[in-house]
Image 1 (tube, rainbow, N blue to C red):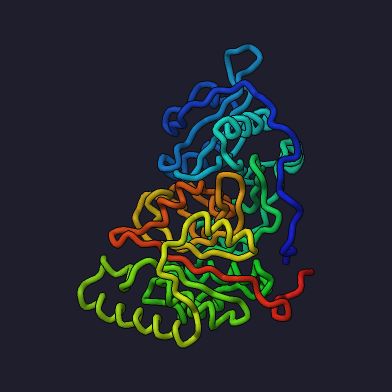
Image 2: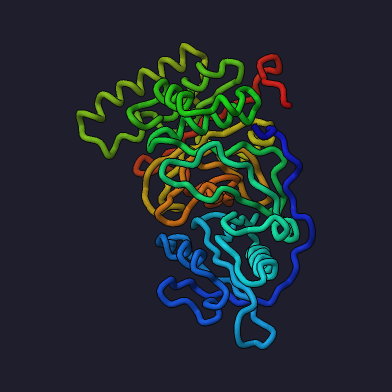
Length: 374
């Protein structure tokens, strides 16, 4: 397994200015300049899914004759985030990648990612990118490329978790908790598997979702060496409004039981809303924050979902999202080390219609219980 600590992932040099143009990508009507550059394999991959939700653009570098294109890259990104992703670069690959990096820098974004479908190691190194860790597993139904790369434009991340995609539609809370535990050194990465995922989910679930108090209690039980605090500014059961009256009733009973479990176990439930500045401060102390948010902003549907907040860079909080949406071309490369601006994350993590924020903060484990780093 890869080590838990990595060298600082920071840009290896200044952003090079590159003359380029940016045009929308229309899969059924590719620009004439693209046709000589993109082969059948690349063209088929670009057209295989509907990427329109992620604002697909072609970043093109004009040729010397000013007529055709010397290079181009297909670029997408989840909405409300602070990065760009290169799906493929064709033609003069390094010029295309440099053009994307320059575009991201002009937009004040935190990073550029590059899916490894066709990327060559020498081009990756020459353009200042570093490798992302190979995922333990992609999220259910979203295979993605075997490799991915990142270049940070503002700050960087010095220690990174390995990406683990949830293997069901409902175990996001359990996965974020387990990844946090492994990232803290309290669990070997090879122990993070489907059995561990489902075991923790079973202890935390409100059937099938994990609500904040139940998740916090389950994390405490699984990780008693670390202080756990629940943050929930709602005084009644949550995440139940979409259910029938009967289903709401028994799930509410379970949530009230979780409150009693938290009291008996000494897990504090803070009734004030956790601020984004407090999230940053918690991460700065070496803690992890499991944050409940709506996928409406990033994916277009209002479904509650747990993510792990583990790092900060100027202007953004870096999360790992255990789910990616294969139907939009979203892969583990998008979901891993994903920078989201504080303002966007603030909006995403206030859930309606109850207007609440739910989170679980996990402190650093006691040294005697932490797994030594290799």
